[in-house]
Image (cartoon, rainbow, N blue to C red; front, side, top):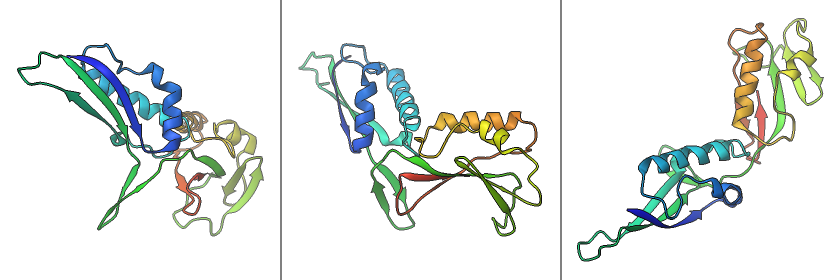
Length: 197
């Protein structure tokens, strides 16, 4: 079987814009032989592209394909039409499933906690350093510039998953924190605003 045509249906305008910029690099191309591995590689590639171009919380399960082929004995046609489908984000509650359009998110706040606490920011002091707010207990034992140099995202920068990986690696390489973690909070009123902690 050969891929005769490849079309797409993308629910989110932001995802559609990004997809149109990168579709020429697709593993699934008209004229190629049908190979399931190419479809899996394309799903992984698109997930990485969207996650590194601002789409926070993109789910690979949102990507699917419709394969259209005439497999009856009368038709000796080995051509298949392929339709790429990228759906909106599905959120499951106790009783229902809702959908939300994927959008490009950027960082509104970046908080650095040098002393982990389960009880929050109650007795912590803070110091602002450029785009960052550094929270600490007692006396600040680290230079804010050392911490900010290890962080790959800035205020108003677009979310990129690779920046989380690089930041985590750099903070671990400082050899002063035991178990560095990075988490994100999404603003419920404005979902395109993230707070990095």
